Length: 348
Ligand SMILES: [Zn+2]
View 1: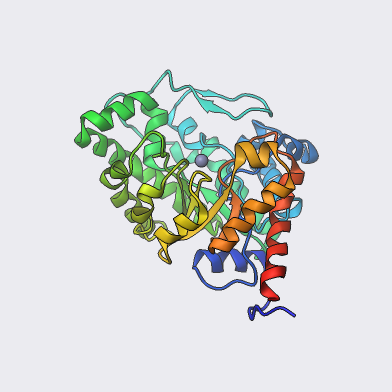
View 2: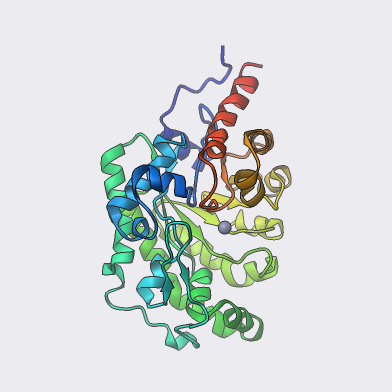
């Protein structure tokens, strides 16, 4: 007999409870970022780059995280270039075995005053396909599963539009200019987030790539903390912040944003991370991609899942968008390990 007093929940109820840091019948398995793989694309005939640009294919491929892998979430925004494409960045679209990328050697802007959001931005096909895919998924799955959208933060958008190096140099040399850039870009983040919540998403992932290796915790507080607080106030749904790399030096600040969750990287140990954020924000993660999910097996996956659960991490999933060649077997090992852990712990 289980000692967990919570009645059985649907996947959606489970994820929403975890986002609210409320009790769940079991810890949900979530993918705030892509779990698309070449194997899954072949299975449903929805390959990249078409599945990044056409809502029906996007929805069909995304649904596999729930129907095939057994996750509690569906997240149809596989790429990080939807907004940048609509802003006029040059995109290398690639094929099904590779991610599309922004050609950052050809930046479109140099100064904050150059930032011009095209009048047709929100009717651009690469923008519209995301809310359309969310609507398709909500119609198909109703209330049974959580649907997560994605809106890129201004720091990430600035990398794409100004180039990583020029923008990082600007952030070192000229804080005023850097803040004007972020301010001019933030409405994109807010309005795209709102559009996806209105289309039926339960939450949006907000990647803002002030990553551990490029930007310090002090910079996070200087440039992004206030903006992230503003996002939490103005986007009327759950926000899952996503920043890669070692981030313990900014987790205290992240815990003060009032966002619902932080999608954290395996470069941070589960327990040390939980000790910092305490009960101020939920954590989701942090199964390692390049080693564990990509090149090891279910046994190693299980070990990392257990480490997160032992630390009290509220949602379990891969640390970031998984490599496209990841095996389905390793992904299915995540929900299996979560259920196994609960069987052991809840019956104690
Ligand atoms: Zn990432």
